[in-house]
Length: 401
Image (cartoon, rainbow, N blue to C red):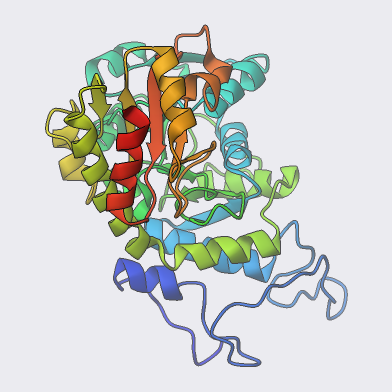
């Protein structure tokens, strides 16, 4: 172990984000982890692995640095980095579910998540029930004793920004012998700590706020300390450890983050806190502007006092995030707004430093059209970036004129 290694567990968020997993290189003193662009590693005799590395699907030092940092900022015991957010979700679902099991999902889940659950895991024999996760009684009624093995939470949701009480849902899941998974992509670990509120695992599309610069695709699973598989399920390693099961499936399936992608994601994580402060302040200003505009029929942002989840968001989040959705009364008007913005770029994805606008019904959520998760056709979703807020407001003003 290098003299430069340090336990960052008790440090503040930004200190952990910058230093966890990034001890200076013991050979050169480099303050940034190198990109280990390598597939295999020389062994010191058969089975004599240096620091456990044998093949980069199973482990790579650059990916290890990212995984250690993600575990540190989420307060988890172990983290696993993947090639995309959906690869992370797929691995976690396979690790914790078996044919015949049942999952409770949000009734406005991200379209890619719903497609994975309904059209990939459905034929595999996993049933699902979409419900309003902001209503704890509705969730309790949807849980099927003995069959429900997972409650899947997005908070805030995508794109309707619903807010769920993580602690209350964790208690329900625990009582049912199920695991509680929270997609923390929108809130980020800077604004929300689901594992501390009782969740068993957190998933991320690290493409979004953690990467933060629209230049890398990735995903992550972070598992809480002592988290176990659903009651009665033994993992492939012969234990009930959720982290061990995810680790096995990560290696067995192989959808891992490459070293350069891991390096870019780690670089983004280091500035997450300062970026999120600006995302939040800009989004609040945009939401307040839209609320006063005559062309807007509804503004959806957890930071506004009239948002139904505002009270819960105020207690379990330290800020309200950079996502704002609003409605304009018709599909035609929504499409017109999307076509007219100049600073807000018309594009899918979110969480980058640049502001984006999209029409969820025809873009990110087209896969749920005609289902219980179909979104309103007059909905516009904004990913509010970190530009000068006056320019963002002016751009929306001219697009709505």
